[in-house]
Length: 91
Image (cartoon, rainbow, N blue to C red; front, side, top):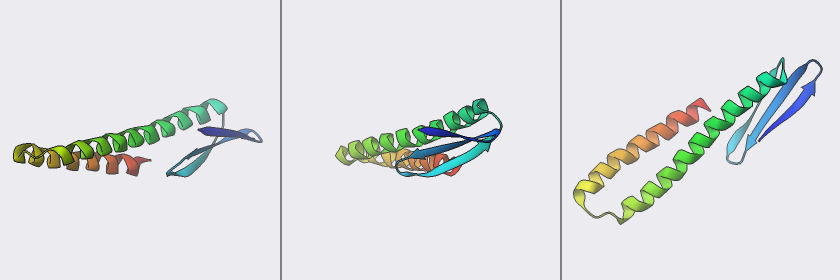
């Protein structure tokens, strides 16, 4: 969740989420600060959602014994991990 702090004429916004490094930035208006905070929080939510998808996918793939499904599952797993890594870089 974002926290806003008036700093003279400017507005500083702090974002903190468990498991992610905190971020802050200063803007000329509260509207700009709110837009940036919404964007950054959205990025964090996407990463968190993909991590949950990966955990569920990994759990299901442990149950699969068919060789074809297992090899396809490993490809998909690699793609999911790549997506998560790229998304984390943008945060």
